[in-house]
Image (cartoon, rainbow, N blue to C red):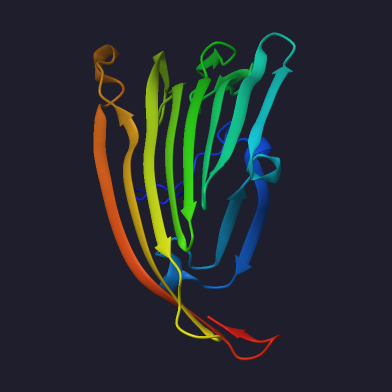
Length: 231
């Protein structure tokens, strides 16, 4: 999920815990398998499906600060078996405000964030599995507005958008009782830190750069014994 321009990950009001089944943390270097952002550890997030793999799951939440709402969101997951295949669609839609307090820069200029720091998130995930084939597609649109510039407080709030689109496909091939080979293809397209509008006296510089990443790998899994597995 990291963006490939600056290896950052925007966390504020970005992901729904209602759609997360399990979080795994793999300690130690993992760059050979997961890329340059995995020098020290890998965090694997496993999403939920509807109970029993067939049904609908809906969640909604609202939180309030003293003078402004903090967040309001809705998420859902629909899963449906189709013969030997399984199809799952999930979505997370959220509106949030980062704070209601005053922000003050190093020069003493300030503004109130109650209506000046909105965050809008829209996420869509599609999972398809059939026999040994698994395909996942994920669209993540994270749009925020800000007035805190690199040095001074800006005169207006300006949009900054983070859009990511991911595709993962893998096929498990069993070559015997002990060895399994899994070809994996990953595709990522991102538009990060995007602002293509006009600012007051050019105080907020337009920025629009796209990143495209295609990776292919072959994973081997060998069962040495019932208790020892080599990957």
